[in-house]
Picture: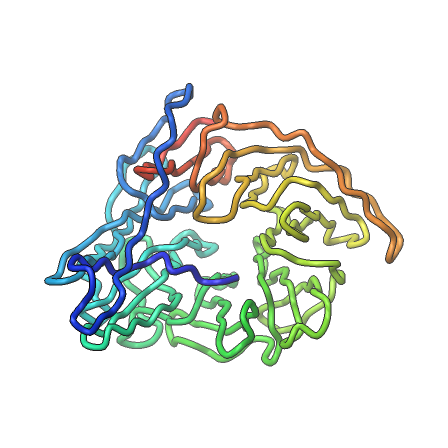
Length: 380
């Protein structure tokens, strides 16, 4: 996992007085019109991220730019939409300066608490010194109630800097987040955060991970553990985030990202490399399947019969396909596992999408289009 410099200061005059480089961001070219069924909802805004709540509501962020004398700053607004389409703004980016005049951020993702009332907002932030031209880039978490009330886990500070990929516990008050800290590039540590009292120490201290996915309805997560100096193979671990107990599920041949636990918690999927997806039965870890599908962003259908895949990495655009969950089989240790080639079903007539998500009940599909980045919702 790496942070991407998606937030940039736009220096309108080219170079500042001290010779600092100016930064800009480019949007993908719009796609050609497609023959699509009419979406039930269209949000005609530049949407930077969105997420379904378990109860069907959608939280989404809208790109907002603000001009200063020399800079254009980005601070996204955050909106909440009811299933019927009614929406309201719950966070106004223009008013959030974080105490710094040259502070900018973009919303990267949202993670709902189990009770549907608190939203952990993952940001990529940048603060710039106007005199020296130096800049500080950092991931951070912002916590909001669905009413829009801000939560200050650090006292006066609204942000938890360095935090990303939050994993909620069932009490709706505690979460564990991943942070790079002082680890080698690509490895992360786990730390606790209580939304009332703030940071609460390290979890699984001294151990490093490449990614984790929460097991729904539990205080557990499935994580990819790697030794602090890459001295051994990646290991698939079941972590009890409350007691800090762990149980090894399997030793992996490789790991390239994308870990995702199925809605029931019965299966886990992850990419071994840029081509091969491995799916494993968590109750009987010897039962696996491998599919050559290409690296991408995946999501499970609610009944776990199919897997959806945007066939490129996050924040890039590609087509959206789905394929059936294959039959998993047990193989002896160290034996060769065959790689199957599924027949994917192309969705939305091959439309190129930037982001997507299937609703929790599986009855609608939300997408963000390239170019204008409008959010559209289709009956499914």
